[in-house]
Image (cartoon, rainbow, N blue to C red; front, side, top):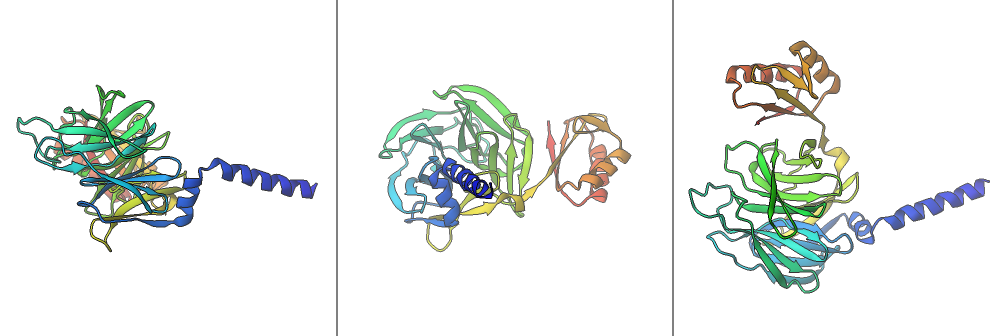
Length: 336
């Protein structure tokens, strides 16, 4: 019986290992790789085909490598109309690489000028340009794209001081379907975006320790992480994520490494205020006294305070002051 148990365990482990794509196993095993070659500008993002190839986007280049970083192919991005020249964080879908392209000023008001934003589609076989779609609805710069449930989702720039962020949902033919509001703020917009089959991930620059957000399909934040993810992210499983970054040892290079999600996650508590300053925690009204007990109990690390525009500043300051006296945490105030 003991012998059979051992055989069953070996069989189970073999099945589980086989279920994980070989490319992901190799990425986890390699741990740290470098994108071969030097390219234009700096790294903007990276995506994975789910099998054995990575696609890196720099300002003007799309680069194909193996999961070991060895160069397979590269091409210049098509230069689109407008004054800027900026490829963004890509996504892979059905044999094609989709690259957002910003020809407008990233994070800048248009001041009546048209939006020069595009999605360029490249064939994985030879990196030839198949088609380019204009997405003028993306106002402040197309910076990142993801594919989920048959549709495409684009996000990007945000002028300084403007709260929240916007995700634009498009059909496969890039007809605008819907705009989604993101409740978190960002430093210089959202730089990268990906979808892991269940959650969306957003990578942002930060003047502090970094900020990567995870949301469900409803775009409500359900995870906050202590890394930026701004140069591209590939979630590998529930515990590991592949993070890209510029390779400072070479001009215009790229590198990526596997990080442990559990060591960098900050739990999120969401508070909502109404126009009278009443506090709602997880959808239920909560007095100041009750809130103090809840926050002390759960020891949340990142607190999002959603507030209506009509709320007076003194009431908002009162709530933030109460929380800061109760628990050590990062605070984020977003308008709705």
